[in-house]
Image 1 (cartoon, one colour):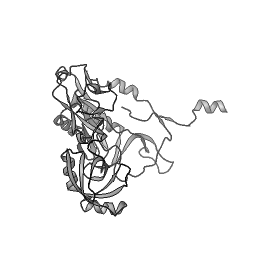
Image 2: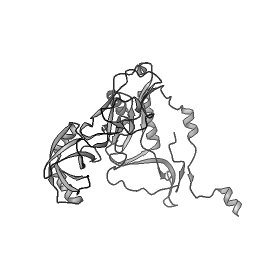
Image 3: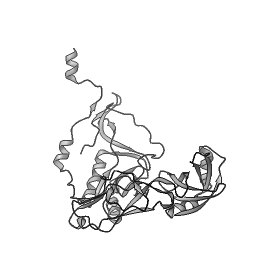
Image 4: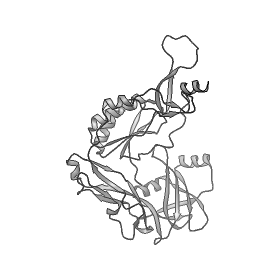
Length: 210
Length: 138
């Protein structure tokens, strides 16, 4: 999915100026790739959050530059509410790019009703696929996941032209027996005085030296 | 339960100050939902354990709980009714230093509703204000 994004050339650099820009409702960004010159940009915060909300990975930059680009990296603040900076990479639609795509579980595992825990170990996978066909997410059906079963990277249904860069035997989701919480007695055993101090001589060693 | 380091460089540490927000450990990484501190502070090993027990009792072996913090800091105290002086007190307990934004616990393998209820119980044990957090998609 490709969306249009209006960008402007950014001529202000540095922490303070970027902070002022953010408070004024624009996000600092950068465009690079294809061996061409790196360009500092700024983009309207609300327009960019709309692009993110629609799940777009590819954008057609308009305004100061007219190029198609991939959203390479988005930096968020501590609270995950505001975008601090965006990296765009120049790509052509047929070019293959490496992206991380979210894995979403679909359905209800029969193993869950047998008392098992459905545990998702891999939440996203690295994919190599044509830039124009980067999927928003990959759905993983768990309707046949019984107790003790697992779904690996090799079992994923990938979009056309995409190859996965993770190890095929890597487990995406499994249904396992519940892990019993450690008993109180075991906890009490684990409680043992003070930790060892690195470089501190023990009393026996000191006596030996004397 | 004694959550504490196995080996340390020094037995005692200075109090320190909690400045700024968490720039690491502020995302949900292992599970699907997380409990994020909104305030900074110290969370003792006993409190971390109390939170774990509260969550486990609610989850009853369903889902998986991840503890994202560890008490690395020795907190010293001097005995009651002691005269001033005579040096720094002895280590009393261990605490995790929490910056605002730190993810304290995570839960995976349960519905959002269950995770919210579980974290509500857990939040009552915490000495800092917390909020519910969802995993961000890639």
